[in-house]
Amino acid sequence: MGRIGGLLLTVPVFSSVLLPARIKIILLFVLSCVCAFMVPKELSFLNFNGLFLAYIMQEVLFGLLMGFVLQLVFQVFVLGGQIIAMQAGLSFAVMVDPASRASVPLVSQFYSMMMTLIFLALNGHLTVFETLLDSFRVMPIGQLSVTQAMVWNVILFSGWMFKQALLISIPALLSLLIVSLAFGIMSRAAPQLNIFSLGFPITLIMGIVVIKVGLSSVAAQMADLIKEGMRFMIGMLP
Image 1 (cartoon, rainbow, N blue to C red):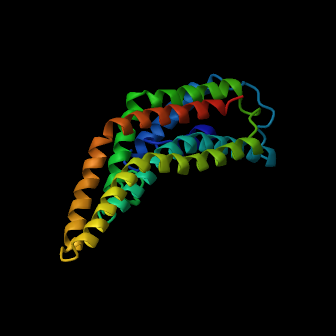
Image 2 (image 1 turned 60 degrees about the vertical axis):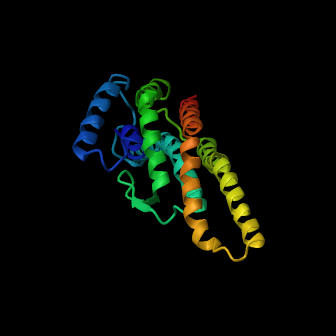
Image 3 (image 1 turned 30 degrees about the horizontal axis):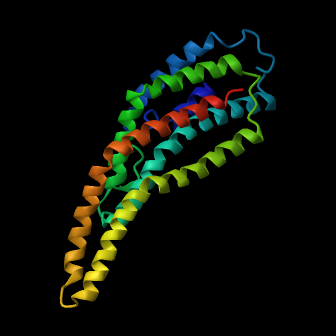
């Protein structure tokens, strides 16, 4: 149960606090029963000693890493939404994300909901379960080894998250930067105009328009990044 429990603690959708604990326990029990057929009948380390605890910790850590990879993909758009909201004047519109109970801008919450729907539409949850079953086939209990290279690759993958978040937000940032430059030129050409009273609502409207126009490309990027995250997760298996 260690590997499965670690996965369910971090993988998107199933780690959400919106999913009742009873459902999580049932899912953990069902997956454990399915994976039990892939476990060798005789295990030499089942004595309750330090070696047994070390194996349990490795199982939990590997499950946490598998789910953490996909969680990073979801956080790409949460971070990108925060950058866009800050530039568009929407950073004050903050709400509590029911999935993580963290305060995030509305743009990030909207992107998070889109990511969840696309993840389920791409059968990402089934891919996660399939990869979990394959991990027991490739690395049975007692033969799993969480190496330093594996942990380092996940750390490098987390750095990739920040780069992708910036790339996603660049079109909106450039569009809103042009609006800010236009207001700067107007303030120099017509100082009598109250640019501050006009700038905020226009920037807010332009931010909403930019988000609306970019929805189709953002949805395609979400699908590509989810597939990339799942490929990385599958690549963790030898």
